Amino acid sequence: MASIFSRIVAGEIPSYKIAENEHYYAFLDINPVVKGHTLVIPKKEIDDFFDLEDDLLGGLIVFAKRVAKAIEKTIPCNRVGVAVIGLEVPHAHIHLAPINTMNDINFARPKLKLSQTEFADIAQRISANFE
Image (cartoon, rainbow, N blue to C red):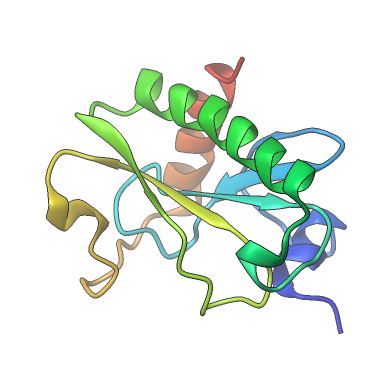
């Protein structure tokens, strides 16, 4: 059975897309720890991050860097934090979160509740800064 992320890539489940290319897809996390919290995934469904082939892993990091630069241009922050946890969804993914303090990327804290309008606005603004 396809992961929820594969279903998002296939268009079966809607997402707030930031960017995509032939191999990778970036979209807002719908349970964000901060505004602008983005997930970056390979389109190829592989559960464990470190099971990605070297070329796919390297490309994922480079794609995530471009997404992080777009986040930095959009959301005021000291930097974009990166986390690879991999327990929530059986599909390799990177969390990118604009942060000002260490606590901003604390996944144990309560998640933000944003409206569809807020999500759509944030996604559109980050996407507009994606190069």
